[in-house]
Image 1: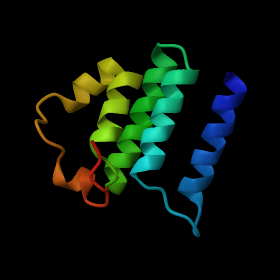
Image 2: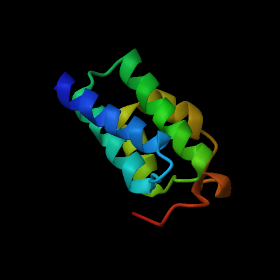
Image 3: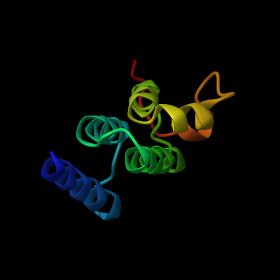
Length: 100
């Protein structure tokens, strides 16, 4: 399982660093799901999930699917970050397609 996660992480990082390709909301949602499935609950998993979510926020690729996967991957950080956000802030979703 660690090997699968490392491969997914490498692909995610390559995509983020690419000048030819651009991530989208599906990439963030899928990588958060990978974090949920391949890392044991705890500090490392929470930190990875939070970093991915915050990167998605920064680039405007947050939709409902990304939010739900973040909550599953890292419930405590998700609660802390999302507390008070009844709806997704416009800046977080400015480039995302709607998904439910």
